[in-house]
Length: 244
Image (cartoon, rainbow, N blue to C red; front, side, top):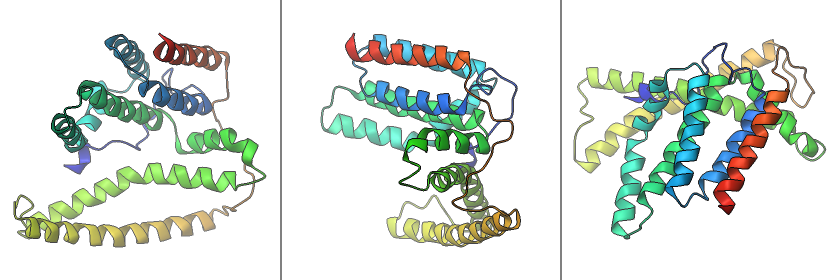
């Protein structure tokens, strides 16, 4: 069910990856996304996969937790496979790998970085544009959107289970009936989303959250020497993928 979707959750650990600067993690994600679109050989896949596995191991989070995200996007993987076969595209393995890599690496960011750290990281990266756009508000919106994904999937799963208990068949192959059942899920989800958003807004007001104001950060992992070394490694990986 939808509970297999773990993206957006945060797992509190005392791991090496958790202690890295959130700024580095975001930069690393961007570098890896760029790298993944330049892969053209199995050598590149092996190198990126090795880095990804090491990161998962040092995050002190069960690898199965990462792999569940792959299962949750199985429909998209099958869709890509079918499209590649129909149009006789020879890069099927590369296309599937790119999607899987991005999902797992993005999950690592949310699993090992708290809400306040993600907000801090985005604010630091967008600071040069502070005079042109509301950086603090944008960072908070992005962070809340990411963190809301697990809540939304859990609510959707609860609604589906409740609908099944009322006798609604979600396995019906008739397209018209399937659309009708999905509408019965999306409407309650939309209503619940509005209620939760309103509740969150009230909570932020009660805590005197001021939009557009600069804020301090408590216990945020600052940039350290190991972040610089890993950034050099990331740039080296990107260079190898692009030029070799």
